[in-house]
Image (cartoon, rainbow, N blue to C red; front, side, top):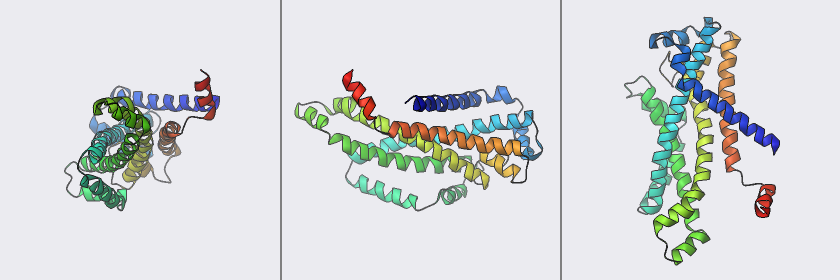
Length: 265
């Protein structure tokens, strides 16, 4: 338990530090937008402070894209999943077919299709593709959790006692859906960061020259200097590991020791 608690604190500290870096990136890195483009282009020859400036701006851009796609996916997916339960019966089947259809397309191909008509050189296509993937996945999760919660014994009992649907949602349904939804958002954020890095590495992510972890790996290459290469790889790996671990911790059922302690208390 102590080891798990320490790991949770380290993961939260890492994410908090990255968030602070992203929020104060302009103050830390300084320079203009043209300067940022030059940093990524000349990353293979960059040293010391220039590598740090590139990493700060790349961290901001990666977190901005991932957080925006996560927020859009959470809002749209939750609404779509709830509509599949409380709306018309045909919406559930349409949602399942749409998830199966988009699941047949790899993320790289989906972003490539979106980029065909993207006037922003990749930003809108990347956000649209990542948000769509998260929206459909979260909609499936919310629909499944709502179906399970509405059939629970507490909801059935409150319904028999004449409780309103709003009270049932607030007292029984939302608390049951919130934990798996948060776990899915954290683990999905891990997937988004990895997918964005892969897309930027092959030139389908953020516009060319915009600092990003995957774009930095592509700019440096396998034969480039090791400091920016190691920094980008470590940033991707550590951030994905922290998000995935926190999500898995939330998704895991309470331990028997924890349940016994709760009963004893």
